[in-house]
Image (cartoon, rainbow, N blue to C red):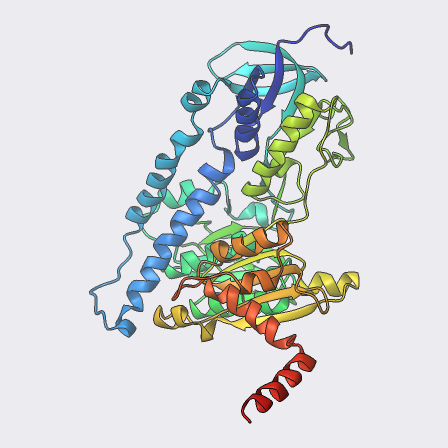
Length: 492
């Protein structure tokens, strides 16, 4: 393999999901000659089969739930029947409305060459593209960013091949073909995807069973957060089976047909019948067909990168779900900056990716959002922390909105107001936590948050009241005793 003396492009980006789009955008902004290659739909998983359709469906489900509970606010409405084709029409309309942001036309207008086709590395500098319209094009580049994303994990469960199943990628087309919500839905996996879709589809009328092998849902979160989510799902009619291993599927007529497919689980004495099976067991990097194995970029099938997102060839980098370790759209965008800058300028100055503040959210109702250290991780790593809580049930805005549930939990260094981690269970917690993320990034402690005016009545006051609880627990006892004597003397 001989390095070319000259290059056709400064940068080639493979994959037009969140990481690839941001990488191409940045490269074009700094006037590099960049080509973006995508074999499927622009926007990747997030736009087409992930964040956008799932949140659109979740919104429809929440509206349905609000209609059913409207009477407690003195509002009496008629039937709350679900027009499922209309629900799915809203999902498709949301995708169509956002799609122009990620379109070929927009990126070409930004100065990015966009090629639709399947890319493969021939050597460390040369990419061969089998164009969607026919023909093959070869381009060399000084740097290459791999942003091919991830794909749903389909494990070799006994009998799985005998039943029809769907994943987070194929679910949306299958739902679009249905006249009504699946009658009996079985979801394997109690992570974010499993929790979100189980609640949403239960609210839309499915009888949902959620099976999770681990002792509880959401293994990345603390026990109290997972318990709050489990309680919410059960309140919406989801049957939650934790500590329950999927053992074997028995043949049935298959998904979506009202057939007799069943799962034997637990200790073997539990059976769950279903019409539709959704596998939500995680995602694995999409590495097949890229030529990575031939270049030695896969170690026993695993894709390896360093702290600068570089592979064994420093000019070949990765970002997004392919790179890991966090499979979030906002992390893909974050990594894209590092991959692009290190690819274009790494021989002059390179930057190590900052993973110190990676927020995450689970869009159940009420939402869950977390950032930084958790109690579980602190205990596992032997880190001493103080825990301060504020009960959302005491918040005026939550009370008047009828959403007085959840909590704000803040972890701080012992005796100090420095914020180490936060977990919030509340309506719109994905927005509420932004204040804590900003405070942590710029080392603003709880005292600064307490001294900041928050609008009344608002959900954001919960953050300030959590800071107030910390302050009361750390009131200077000696100073207060002195002040008590001072005021007594002033009354004489």
